[in-house]
Length: 334
Length: 256
Image 1: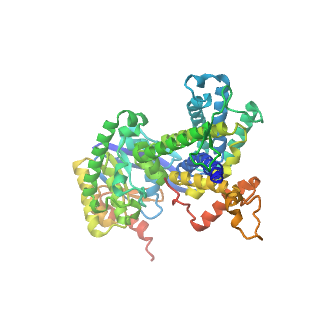
Image 2: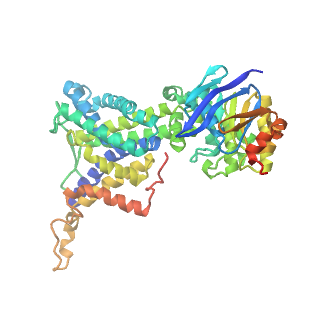
Image 3: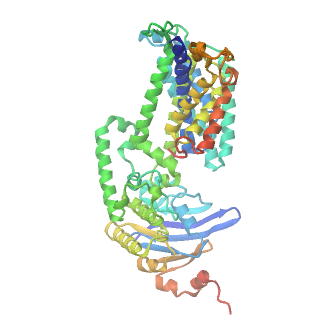
């Protein structure tokens, strides 16, 4: 039984954690792609930017969360989401809109977004330094140990407070995005624009508003994902930059331009990563005695070493692209 | 009659190619004005300029006395200047009915806040729009395919959907870009009848690009002939058809 608990802690919990983070990032990437038709490389650093704003606010008001019994960082997250959303719209107006007005090729937009990435990283390093900072400043991270009511299970399932917050937030975000896209008129206008921008304009849809709304959604989800990740681990200026590749892998695996695909892709990539680095020999240990004598159970049976975790998304990416070139859900438009 | 669209001295070049070259046209309110001309005469480019899809190099466009030069097409839509596309555009992932329901301007739900604050009003309006979309789709004879994805419709059905789009809102001027191309003869008769009815009963002004001479002859008065980016002549269809210059532009100079 303890082996199963080990599996739950190392695969189910951590797979859901990275899956939720990737999903929230990939939704932003995929929405930006479906409306503006370019790969937005600065997305990961928008996540860092959001977390950075939370770090700033929490440093200013470390005690504010104690009043309602939540971590201060979580209470300040909505403000950071709003700030990041405004920043995202501002970045678009300053750097991307002039390029769009000249009708440049998508690759020019991609390179511009790489520039924005470097700029954001530099700015954040300038203020936050290069080290890592915990977002729990005045309080301690709660850790929940769930004891299982079985005799054989002596070890508890361990979930931390930020992980639970992350799960709840991811579910709420996904459901409200679904309702927004399928029910609201503005969501439908977004679908229309991703389908045929010329016709959308000719149908009286203000495409500038749609672009701004897209950035608001992408920016605030990015801020939330970055903050929740930093709560779970710690804030680092390059924390989310290393998530850029798995997030893009998730968006492509799910079908580019497809928000539900991005969610599915996020979890596929997240679980693939954790399953690949999981030590399977732990699960085989209980049945070790039934093995023939010449077969010895090695102490580590992971598919790849932890240090090679980053290659897993690419393996998945290649496999999915061969099997289903448009992604799990057929991509391209919302 | 008063002038509703006035294009004066417009120029437009793509690279070194002068597509529109000092072109001036006027469209009278309540008319069905035809526009013909050989391929490459700049008809669609002129449409794109009037409808706000293309910036012009020089010149002015007036809509009911108001300067609409370089105004974006979504703003023009709200002023009542609509267009259809030569190659039918549709929201391919929505049904035919949903395509029509995308159109009505300034719906309450478009505003982010009213969607949350006044759900009752939004849903009442939604059902009004649906009602109108049903009427329109009946009118254009597509009610049997209303729940099909628009991307799966035939070319001719997509053209009808384009016309239907202009009927979802109170348009004042509709620019029709080769609405008849790819539509079969029987359907074409309906289409022409519908355009006449919209013109007579709803007071729509039409500017029509067409290659089908029968349709031009039946619908349009006056007819503008465009060649090499400028107006060659304007007159009734009989005048146009008997003009030797026009015949030459269409069929090439007679070899002697």
